[in-house]
Length: 141
Image (cartoon, rainbow, N blue to C red; front, side, top):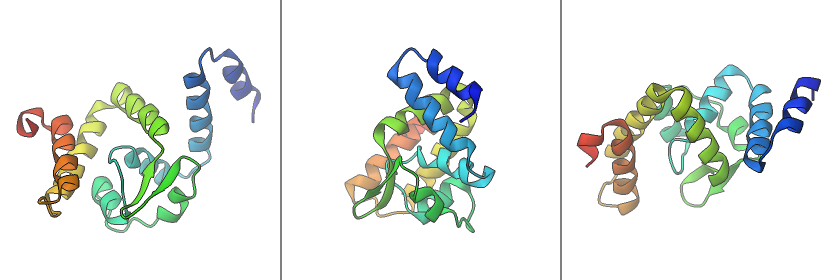
């Protein structure tokens, strides 16, 4: 940990600020490719390699092992993985504030991926509608 990080951590006034700083520190240690993929994992409620590759538009994605080893990524029984809910909220809030276009793009890709799944299963239909409401509110409503 460098002095700047410790200063910022000491100046944090809320638990949420401290948690975000720790997440930022973790992200700063990742390669650019893995960091981008981690941001994308916040978009869906769960993901596997195919879902994440669709969100990133990267059919050759091979960083799932690195991503799944992070402390804020959890096993999601029957579906693969998910980002811990509190961490997910920090990532989504940050992405929405700093790059809403990217948020919408990832959400549009997630909705498109969901559309290719079995929409008679409620979990896929709900997931698709959720992402449509973000990426294209008129179509999602």
